[in-house]
Length: 149
Image (tube, rainbow, N blue to C red; front, side, top):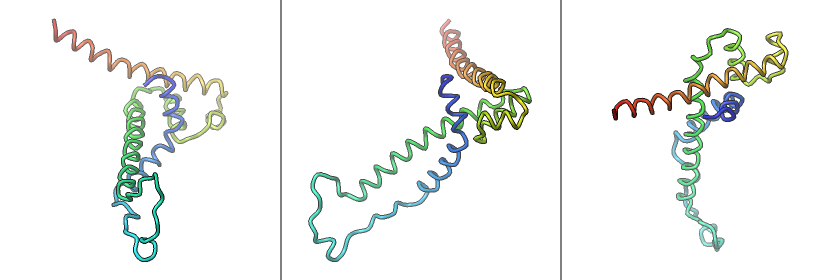
């Protein structure tokens, strides 16, 4: 992930976790609204040009939700797997406040810091996380070169 994606993931972490739980609850059960029409509704003309297969539409909708869920899980897992890189207590506190969804101004008031200091601390956190994500790719490349020699 690049710096901008990491900043966005830190900012959106609090709602992404809630959305993951909601999507898992929705996708855990069987599809609803998959019943046949009976009576007068079944004899009425159907609209032309759209797919009226209810089961197909439900499967397509659930497939889109699964893809969205996978993207959210990747982002949340990245953030959670890189939390251990932050060792400074103040930086870790700022990180946890960001993950809870607090604004920069509220974090500054909470920690008795200026907003500029909070921005710098957030930038340090992002640079550490982005630096280590690039290092993992570097170590893979070094292992490939080493195995070829």
